[in-house]
Image 1 (cartoon, protein in one colour):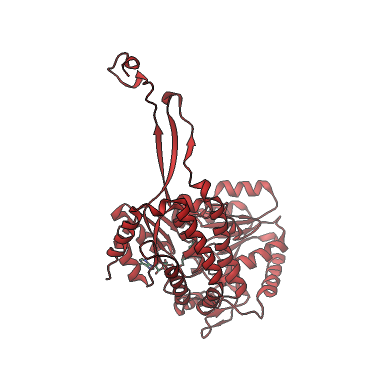
Image 2: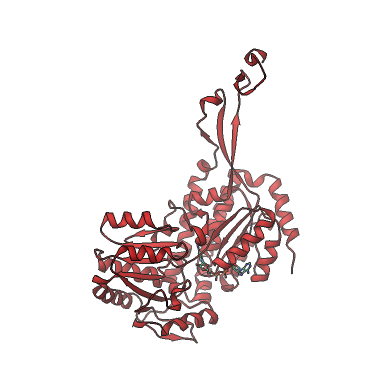
Length: 446
Ligand code: NAD
């Protein structure tokens, strides 16, 4: 196994020069990154087409555009985020003032997945730079073209001792995890997340884990069905369902099931029929997904091409929790539908399974919304929409329980790559005696 010790040592030495802590240095790095993303836009679009057959529209709206927006916000706000924050001081500490300093951890390791290979490598990097860290990024081996372009761009922008990309697969990732980093930010599957945390435990390195899980989408009897159908069709089938927060399965109220499914079928046809489909990332993933197609009844879709690694947007009805498709995260363009009559059945069903990364509820009723929000723990989500919460830099994005640890985007990205150093600045003009058990007249002794 290759050793990355000298790489990490060189970053550690560079970090110790304190250059990365200078806010002007960080802003300059972020500006350079922004200019490069614009310059490389076409190369990324071509690479995403090669790797996943992503359309130009999806490449821009779900990857490049999101990163440019994160950069814009971070560059504007960093000078104020980086300032020490003065907080209240209790009366017992009279004479002193209290501050929270945000300081970088040091050298960060970022490991990213293949489904949004540019966005999920670049977004944590923005946080790492903003907070003043050095960084090593290990992008996914399953989208090699995008990883190559990303590596080339970073090589042109930054010296290796500051920020670098290490390309490679599982072994490379494991070799990197042998080293002592000061922060690890991992995006990927639950099982690998556990391995990352185990490796981090050896050095007591703090981790952020952005993982996955089965995200429910509930369509209640009082929902606006037409809008629900459109927003679900978009959220589920964008990127061929290979989105960590895509609705994994539908729970539809029995009373509106038939009209809703007609509208869903129409919405899918309108959005995807005759259009080029984003590819399933590998033959292994394709085989796993197509094995689900013989479960339940196919309402729409169901055709798949092994040669092109594409699967039509597919809706399966007549599914129950006992079907194999309900055992693990689907992560593909197949949407199983279950029905319910009472909201409590939904709550009980979800409770029997690990905390979802996302949850979506379509309902016009504030009481129903409140009941669901207060009964189920999930990473984040939407009322009357799907997936859209991820695109707001003002909403921390992350999981809970097995769907993840920690959250990022916007200021949260800065915070998650910063240690919050609490400092009390005490006066020397006087001294309060009460805390010293055996000192009499301490005030007079200064
Ligand atoms: P993955 O866990 O297989 O791989 C992620 C990264 O870890 C890759 O860079 C890979 O090379 C590396 N890796 C793989 N096995 C490893 C091991 N044993 N030890 C160390 N490193 C290893 O995930 P994936 O298939 O690339 O992505 C799909 C998963 O990621 C899904 O579960 C999805 O829900 C999740 N995901 C989560 C988010 C989020 O923000 N929460 C975003 C995208 C994807």
